Image 1 (cartoon, rainbow, N blue to C red):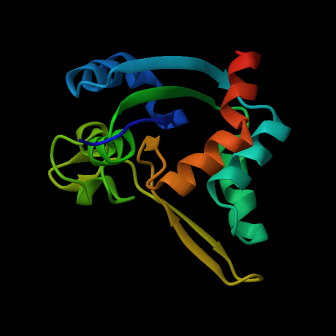
Image 2: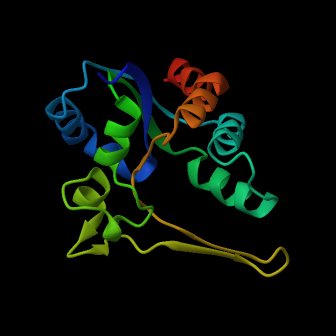
Length: 166
């Protein structure tokens, strides 16, 4: 039998308006515990902590672009518990950063793709000085894919800090 575990879902700024529908999907997928721990607009320092948590190896230009996307934007966090929660949530969110490439029925495909194409055009972050050429997909949701990544997210405490600010 698969071990009961916790994981976390980050509902990014472009998806906050879908919170109620997301909760309905989480309930339908039989997570044994669903705890929304807050919605907040991130202060500058929290946005920096979040960018570091999500992309610990990012170079300065990518870090700045991610930070700028999250800073002063509303987002929410959800803690989920279930047997195999990490894998279960990963499948529900969708495994491609591009929502148009996610399986039908996943959260990213449902809210951010249409006819197999991404609804919101990705931002191309291009900085000739650093050689950065990164396509940021507006896909609405992030979740850890492995136990190690989940543990790093929990250890960072970023979502607890932002939840207290809400």
